[in-house]
Length: 418
Image 1 (cartoon, rainbow, N blue to C red):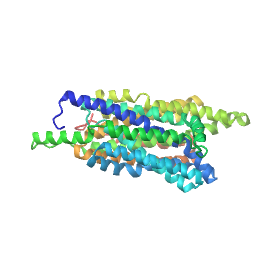
Image 2 (image 1 turned 90 degrees about the vertical axis):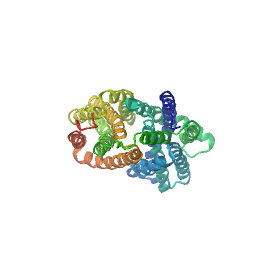
Image 3 (image 1 turned 180 degrees about the vertical axis):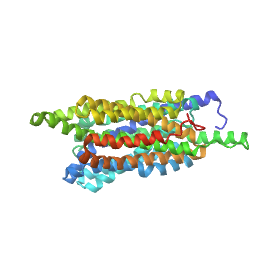
Image 4 (image 1 turned 45 degrees about the vertical axis):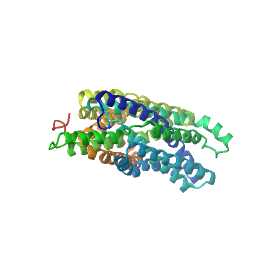
């Protein structure tokens, strides 16, 4: 497999992107269901609404703990084993969550959501797997296609809550866990898909090709740009913190705003509808245009699109600061927030890949995923403190500091960056 012809490599890469995209759809169902149900189950089992956020924190910490080990495993044994281990984590987590609800043990629920989050580390790794065999001029495009496919699973998970309750009741599952039956089946399908169809393994094949190329060009130093790679990690993590912290506090702000405007006439259904529309448009901004940003990253340069993402994030924070008293202002802010995250994440991941020598890529990719998840969890906690003390506008101002830092620290114009 070290003598792939260009035509054969294109064919293998096309199939790899298709398999990874289907795996993202299937794998995203469990994560989407957990994000939707976790807080409700936590509040129910703990008997304290104040502890409901721990489930979301647990599912976020999962990738932070497992991204680096999975990346190391991929570097040694290939993407297929790493991704299927992620599926095993998710399957185990689903079983633990259902058992926790049946036994009504709150700490066990947190362990289950943490394990499901660990499985999501495999989903995060999929976008890097799309670049292993990609031609340099198409890395951004191929990566963005896999990112875009996350939308389907992420949306399908919450939509399966209602049908899941019907199925769960028929299967004798505990209340509010029925949708995990779909999640379990989807994870099994993803595991089988990777085992059967992710052949040849894209990372192992890329490593063999890189070794053969190095042997053919003896004495030539392979390109590595650690400064640019570190910046890419920082830009991706920083953009993710901005997005996650503002997005996490938006439902709370909208609820307060609705009650302030309409007083006792505001119903929970009114608040839910406003929050639902806003978050749906935000998720659309995150994923719907990711292929466009991937193409722009290929044509304009990765760094330029990372900075475009910061412009969009700055616009979002501007609306959050100056137009947060109106529903339309918050909606525009969340749409721009999603678009800015998409541009920075897609281009930043492509920048990290091409700035790293082949033997360092998977290690840095795992570090990036881990830092991104860990910083988002910390950012969400701090965002709650900032919101309670300085309101939504204060949160927007605080988040803008990160955007400014990403722009100021940009290595734009240095060798290897564009």
